[in-house]
Amino acid sequence: MRLRRSIRRYTDQAVPRDVLERLLEAARWGPSAHNRQPWRFAVITDPARRAALAQAMGKRFRRDLQADGLPPEAIAQQVQRSIDRISTAPAILLVFVSMADMDQYPDEHRQTAERTMAVQSVALAAQNVLLLAHAEGLGACWLCAPLFCPDVVRAELGLPADWEAQALITIGYPAEDHIRDREPIETKTKWF
Image (cartoon, rainbow, N blue to C red; front, side, top):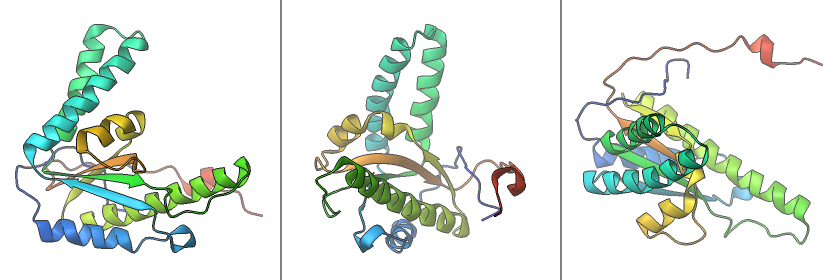
């Protein structure tokens, strides 16, 4: 856990399908609210599909940044960096939540809690992916970009309406070594 890092640059070496399947199997064993397993995954290793998704997401990102009033040069730079991160990773794993099997409540308070539990379950499954990817000698990076354009992701991949994009994990063999520390736990903890 202490050695896992968010890696954003990869070699050109393909990630074998059996390794990707092991990552999905690890995700499957994540803790799950009510054991409903609300996670859904899409794996893209085809370069053309990765590039098409990156371009579609980049188009929405550009529109959002323009609405924010950023200068054109800054927009172009941010959008291209995002496109490059997605399209150059040997594999990407998109992580979705589905409320299809979760409990339905008549009141907003409990329904909001149920949705939060589903999203937490998905994040826990994704953490298993990140940890096993590191153990397999891979680099990986969690990107939240799909949260800003879930409709674009769903349409580009032709996915069911209940698949709500939560994250995109880039995966590959690291072409960088990246060390960052964490804040001391004492700054984030209250003991009672």
